[in-house]
Image 1 (cartoon, one colour):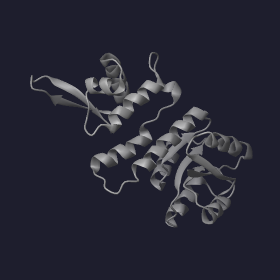
Image 2 (cartoon, one colour):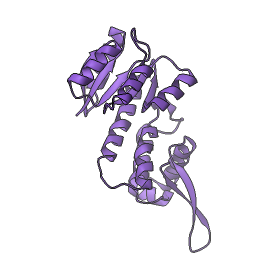
Image 3 (spheres, one colour):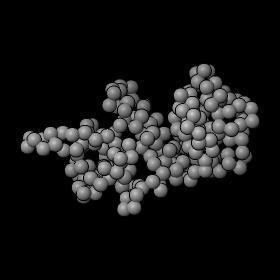
Image 4 (cartoon, helix red, strand yellow):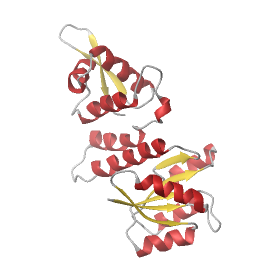
Length: 222
């Protein structure tokens, strides 16, 4: 289980976020606190794997708390959950070591997708031996989820995730034909979803030349 601490100065929002987290398999709500000092105390007193952290708090903002956690060498991952959508704040958060940045208000599905991507990253990094391709795939899981309403008409989130997973599991870049066979969808469907995921930045495209000299598109994680 991933022990998650919910940190938000608004008691009502903290309760809603905690209920959301409790509904996601593999996650456990380790507690709810409403200021930075209480968050630090919770980290010292119990094992916290992940912190859902608000930016605005009465004693210290979320960026300051994140930097303190890093300075202390605390082994806690941070996902910022805030209404602050300024580009400068997002940049500062990423530089401070925040893994994900979620802007309020958000739906349960949006949070679920972010947390599931985070869980995939944790699972991917449990191996000892890694190479560049493996690292790229592991980090790519954080960018692998998109809001449910981001799918254009005629596409579904379930099929998009299925296609992405086929590409993610492949040991090398794969063609639309290989994806269609693994995902058990038509080649045209595989091509449509691969092009969509590539346009969204979730996949990379490359050319591979066959025996006949004609190039074929192959796909991989960023």
